[in-house]
Length: 185
Image (cartoon, one colour):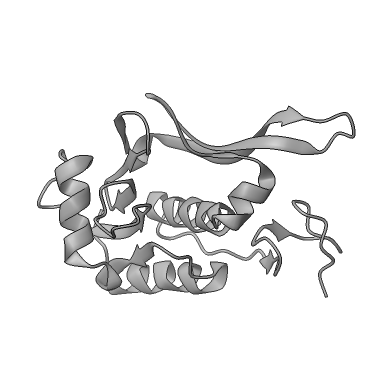
């Protein structure tokens, strides 16, 4: 896949529509120090021919050694605890938020964000809905999901009107956010 100027502009548009999250860098805005940190720690298989699309750095010291890195060919991930993972973009089937626990009222008390591929799956964020919102994982989820869909099919044109909740960053098409219940105005 060739990262054309048109494709790069579509990716930047997604980033702007979804909201810019702390620790997330896109295309030419990614600090080289963080790319080096990611390559050293968890993106060791990254080839010199791969173009870095986005990098999410979870580290306090801004080293890039934990988080994830998306290139035009692969998704690299390193959790705070655990080993690193790599998935080819072409193998990704779906990225979803799933409830792992509910309370008696039917409200979600724990969720995870999971990337499914032919070769397995990666859980790259988990916690209560409040924790996922607080740590900006919901906007990151949508940025990642939309960017990977675009990388898998660069000719695709999104015709869906995106409504983003100002409270949590989730999407919806009704009168209220499906994630946190905030009304859309």
